[in-house]
Amino acid sequence: MNKLLLVVIFSGISFVFAQTSGRSFDTASMSGNMSGARLLAKAYASSNGTDNRLFHRYWMNGNVTLDNGKVVENEFLRYNLMSDELFWLRKKDFSIGVVYKNLVQEFTIFNDSARIADRFVKVRLRGANASDSTDTYLQVLTEGKASLFVQRKAIITDNAANGRKEMNGYYLCVDAQYHSFAPKLSSLCKTLGVDGKRMKSVIQENHLNICNESELIQAIKKYNE
Image (cartoon, rainbow, N blue to C red; front, top):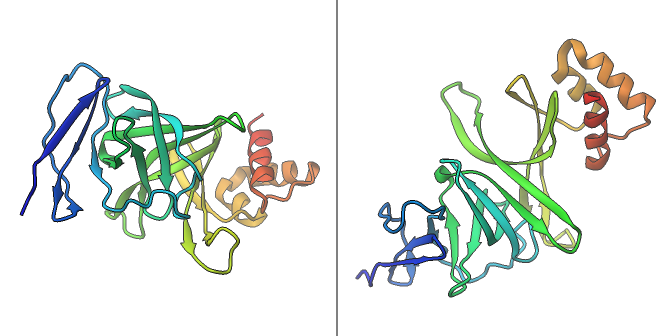
């Protein structure tokens, strides 16, 4: 039997969730001050928010840009690379919520210790069929004439030190078109078509191993110069 539906509004941010027999369900209802930027999320059924499914080891401060262009700042966020979901820790009572993806444009999570910001944007990617598409969070690695993105993915395994094996997918965006490729010379050059020869020269002249993500980023940056 459903328990009380609770709507909490604080600091201009609204978190909507419900409980039913110890589990959570989505709700489309929303109320409160519509003039401020706020998050809308569903409650996370599990209390385990620190496992190896999450891209960031700890909760970190971050900002969320909503589809309407408004920005929610300084919230505790983590990205779940198994389910491609943005987790939110509500400061008032430390409840964990999954932010509704359809309301998000992008989000940035700040790693204070390393002074690094991880920025993710929501992109609609096409599947094998033209009519088959899905909204996916891609991490921005570098932007320019050719922009480089990575889809963070992993599987649970006992054979890795952190309990997971990463299976990232890379995308190059040129002229607003996203192209998937393997981090190999032949695949990257093929993705760039007639400009692939210039990319090959950039990689060879700078002795870059693009199987390494940091050197792949360097290659794209030099290509964009």
